[in-house]
Image (cartoon, rainbow, N blue to C red; front, side):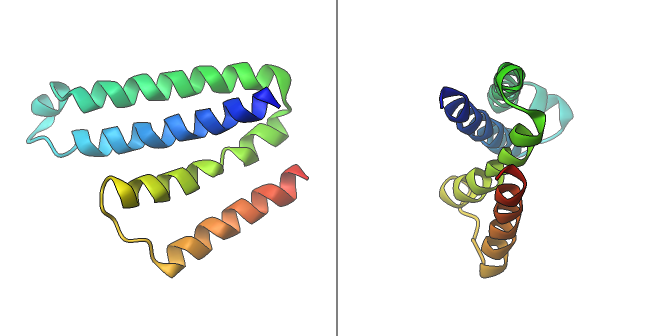
Length: 108
């Protein structure tokens, strides 16, 4: 059970990392971006998520972990709505639901 909690944390950290990277791209120019703290927070979160992924793969089958990582799309949609103020359309919701339904079919 704890491994599934780790998978949820891994996917949330990966999605949050993308949000920080998106914020870092708001810098003017490449060298300004290199001094943006958001770039490093995003990088840290990606490395931490990768570490969790490695840990979880020791206990769960790859054919289970990879489809479950599609939960990242849910986190991404929610975080982009809450933090970046992006719109969630019906089409986006349908797309994410299809991806998650496919993941459920593979893992069950």
